[in-house]
Length: 506
Image (cartoon, rainbow, N blue to C red; front, top):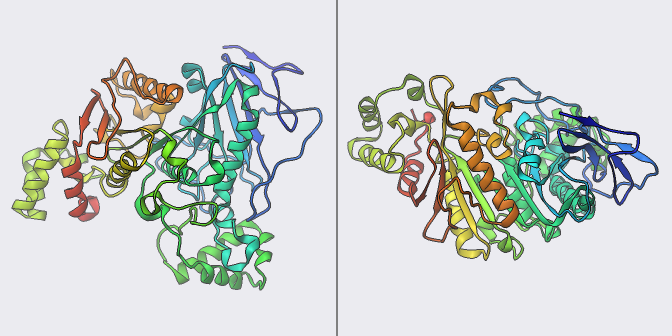
């Protein structure tokens, strides 16, 4: 491994000035590049031009978080804690070439954490070096405003705040504009940009497809566990009472005073107001609101013309957020049949069992209480059908279903597929299954990189993966042995959803 950084190299000239990064292990890295600036609650603006050369050696600030970071669950998704500041509009680049005209595909990562938490460097698996080298692509990861800074709905307080509810997504558009202007200097092709994200990042992908200002700034999309029903459809929620109560809690009378309240005080006052007026439990809703910037959830109002032209890979993982004591105890199938029929009745229980065995003949029956339907898979299937029916571009569906050697066998959880798409399984020890993970990582990565380069997720290591139609969800199952199946879990997922089967139903 060789490190290189001289006084004037490697340097890239951007539209605002020259940036210096470094070369390590044959990949050029530029970290913490400011792509825009913004006043609190305002739309992003361009940064000023500068003279000389700026060093881009370290990650930039991440958006302040509403809730303290915790190490809980770190073995499943190893995390990094970083410096927080409202000045957080920055991005990171990994590239194998700085040659203009190289025209490498550009892959832009939108992090998870809903629309209220997370960062571009939160998980170790988000590192772009391996993807850049092994995929011969330019990788970009983006920070933007979140929670009350990025999505506080102040529209009821005047035209000045009309765009506050979508400020975080407007930041992402500003990042894509910066990429469009400057990425050729990093060896990238601004006309071949793929955006991808997981969980909240997948939601950001969907919402950007519905924002006209983003038209032409990206050309393909991967949505990972990003479809969660009504969360992207909130257009009529009246948030003015919560904002007014927040101001009362702070002892202020004019809404513009919120622009200077210290962030911790703002969050404390907002959470107090929300819990008093809306709900004492859970996390307040944050996400884009339908207006002139965002045309709303395509499941409600249809796809924009631009969204219809974007090839999409979309999928989720087998268990997502669910876990079952029966899985821990490895309850045998005959005993599980008794449990299921006792809870749901002999006839309904038997139908559920048969539907599960048809969908997952290789899985233990105790997985019925761990398999995801209500979180992402059910909504993803609906999105795929509507997408295949209404959009011109191709839609490719997948399910990540591997079981991991943790606690005697743990089914694929939310985020467990990320290291495979980034080719970073060595950064997440728990996802390494002997004789399986390395091969599966190669299969997933090759298919994704094929999609990035050509718009078609093909791989010589996989069976042929065809696009979906309205009546045929062609799903690539990523597991110990990968296979393509057609409408394989439709019956099970519908029953599972209707019967509200989950650990919470016990």
